Each structure stands twice: as C-alpha cells, then as structure tokens.
Amino acid sequence: MMSLDTFNNLDVWPLTNIDKFVEQCNTKGIKEVNLTGSNTDPLLYKHLEELTKYLRERIPVVMMGVRTNGVGDIDLLKYFDKGSMSITSFNDKIYKNTMGQGHPPIDNLKRLLLSEYPIANNLKINVVLCPELLQLPNRDLDNTVLELFKLGKIKKINVRQPYGQPHIDNPFSDLSIHKIVYGNPCYLIYDMEVTVWDVHYTEVESVNLYANGIVSITYPVTKGCHPVYGNVKGQEHFTKSGRVNEQWLKY
Image (tube, rainbow, N blue to C red; front, top):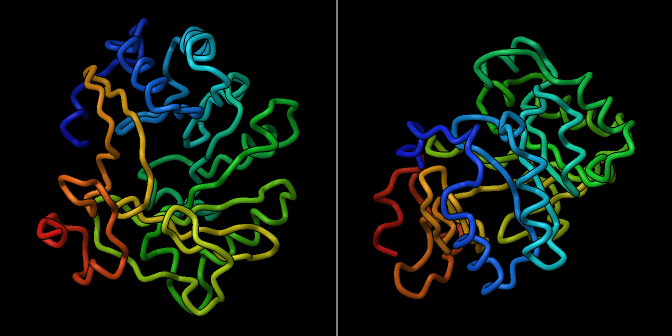
C-alpha cells in the first residue's frame, strides 16, 4: 500500500484501467464501490461526477460509497449513496495529535446530517484507535461515542485498529458482543452499532483499482489469509503484539 504514495491521480480522467476494473466488478457480481485514498482524501478528486456517473452506468444497481476525513467540500458527497467519515476525537488537541493537523470537522458533519443527500442517512463514523483515546481516568473514546450519539442520526461507528502500527487491545472487551461484522466484534452502545475493526484480518473480499492502474481481486491489507486458498484466519491466530509481517507468514 505504501508504495503507492508517490502516485497522484487526483486530476486524471478516465482512471487508468477503469474498464478492466469494471469488468472484474461485473464478473464478481460487485454491487458496491467505495472511493478512498491511501495518502489523500477522495473529495479532492477533481472528476467525482464523471467517475460516479461512469460506474453507475456500467455496474448494475451499484451503490456508491466514499471514505473521507470530512474536511473538504461536503456538497461533493451528493454523488454518493453511503460513506464513512473519520473523526478520531472531538477534542481539538487529541484530534490534531492523532490526525496530524486540523480540527474535528464537527460543523461539516452537522451540516451533512441536516442535508437531503442520500449519504446523510447512511453515514458511518471511523475512529482510529490511538493510545491518546484510552488514557484514564476519562477515556476520550467514550466521550467521542457519546457525542456522536447526541447528533441523533449516527447509527454505526467503526473503531479501527491503526494500519501497520502496534495493536491496541479491544476497548470494549468487557461488553457483550451484539454480533460479528466480517469477523469483527460489534457492540450495541447508546443504540448504535460500534464495531472494533481490524483490517489485518477482516473477512472482506474486494476488487481494487489503484492509483498506478493495477487491478487486483484480493483485499491487500488482509494478510491473515491463506496464500493459495484465500480463506481468512481468525483473530486467535495473531498472538504477537504489533502488526508485523512475520506474525502471519506461516499461515
């Protein structure tokens, strides 16, 4: 993934190999396409209207999704049916420390939830687990979950393990599991579904189009799968702390 950081296709249309991507999506029966970025935000892409129109015309009954940090032009979200917004904390200092810069996009989030865009009724919040969120006596993570509940329309939260960084213990392990979502435990908190999500072993399959034009049919950050059969190994197979390649190579 990190090898793609040198590529910039924010002003490229059509995307390299997009026809091959569409072909693979139709072969696999894909019904949902999510726009994301490894080192940028998808709302900075300059051809969102062309891209979403192109995909809707060529992939039957496709649902368009987006993964954003919420600091860009919120009106661009009108092109999407669903999405997720990353808000690690509502605390200015913690947000800046964990996200690297800026302030929590609270005003943008509130404006989006009041809009008539389809995504307003199908928006999930991503909270990246960081040590700063779990410091006692008052865990900032608990405050973030409560503040999201107060907004009224948020029904789903993903608390995500940081990619490529040391593993953080499940902050809700003392609660009863509500259900399992793609291999990840989901809890019911304030009537919201809060899933502790780990991309390293999540049971997701996907077709992927990268900035360099490569099309793949495996979920690349899921390294817990068998190299031949592709079946995803459960969390119990990962016993070492930290996300380092050696811990899953034998599987």
